[in-house]
Length: 68
Image 1 (cartoon, one colour):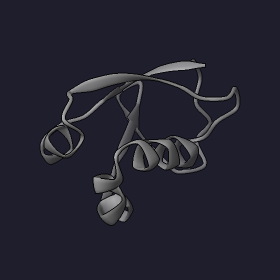
Image 2 (image 1 turned 45 degrees about the vertical axis):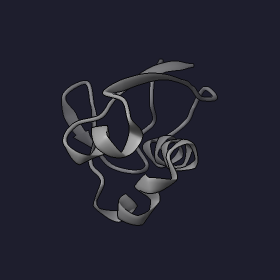
Image 3 (image 1 turned 180 degrees about the vertical axis):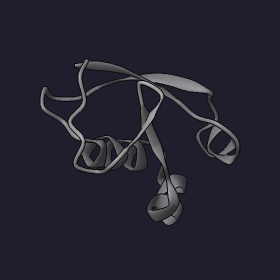
């Protein structure tokens, strides 16, 4: 599935972009998305425990399944 990921604040600086498209397998979770983001942008890994993810404008837990 193809997802659009938006970065705000310091994350925008650490990644060097405000948004990007990512391809993840169907059935992926927020935790899988964070794995992918940290692999693509190693600077995010140090603060991973404090990262928040919003799915359709709602905060999402690591086990939340994503829909493309």
